[in-house]
Image (cartoon, rainbow, N blue to C red; front, top):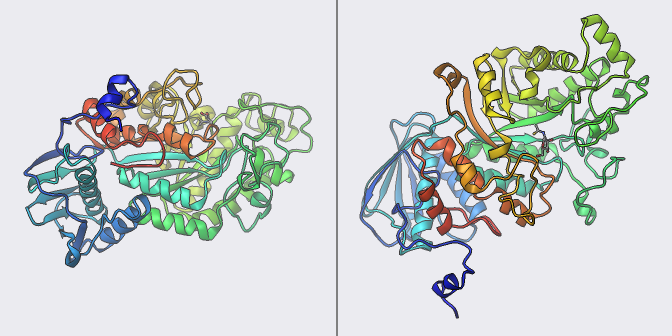
Length: 520
Ligand code: TNX
């Protein structure tokens, strides 16, 4: 058998395995302060021991590791040789923790269950590193780790409309988020291609809108068998998914994309179209007349009934209403829209869209929710800034300007944080390229808030990756596009001291670029 050295000389090695990584323990995202020493055989497993605090953290850690690394035995009771890990109350804030190492035990100190869970995740990563790369990584016997996140909102968006992800896949993804200390799933549940959430008041939304072949004008991207033509999440599925996410510290923010990207919804409920509209307009993705019409009064009742059901399903403070990519000539031939234009004394699409969004926001506010939207929600009059946040996806200069105007913002620039973009400029790489390509190094090195003033930073909630699913034809493509860039973004959101060489050494040793998620 050829050894890795031979393969490397022949130039076939995919990544370099550093003999001496720049850090002795494997942790991603890298903690605030690591001062550990000593070295012991990697323990057989971790045995979390809750005190007055830590019970939920221990349970969540068990579920997480079982989902991500089944059969690895990361958790093992102390009487079966598990390494005792005391979970105790102390300082740490909302998500921070400290770990103290001794030869025969460790202690995690935290103020919240999430902080303690994050301490366990760090310890689990250290254990896996020491097990799998025993020459390169240590399981320490003394010293201390102190940790807390740099940013409050560390998320990923996931588009399940262009591609259906089964419940287990969504939960696996949530587990990966938690393992990377990401704390928000922005869940894109509807689009032109489909509607994915069960709504009792309008069963046709999923009955018709969740499946390919309802009359969409572009051919399905997949279509390789009946099981892949669609699907949706029942209310029970959503309860289970949100319940799991909550346990592992992930806030699930649902998105129903409106008024644009609504072709599936309009196919399912054609009564929402203005019958007098007699000319087409096209979305950037070529869907004709795909926007809910702000001049059709019935729209508001339907949307409110949908929101009523969804706020029961999603406990998050936030509800995202989309607002991206409404064509400039939307509703140009609609008598109902033109009537509203006349009443408001406006022209074009943006003021009508703003009017629509303002009504949605007022409704969501009455339900106790903060309205989320893509950055275009600021067009044509904008939203009530006190009760919303915007996701900036174009140039970060726009996010900065929105922050200066008083909007809370989440920064997710397409050129660096859109994980559907290809990893490299090679023509045969999978992934899209309309926003350019982004290597892991480029995503890692991207400075989302360079040059922002203190006031602007005051309106920064944080950052997120966005995963659009047009190119996600299968798991291998998904993994290749999403990893390790998701972890690169996680480290930008978490760590106050970034270092690409350290990141690269850790990722290179615990690869997750190809095949199934390997973790760190
Ligand atoms: C733009 S970014 C979109 C999505 C597409 C994505 C593909 C944004 C808010 N809208 O509808 O899926 O590009 O990269």
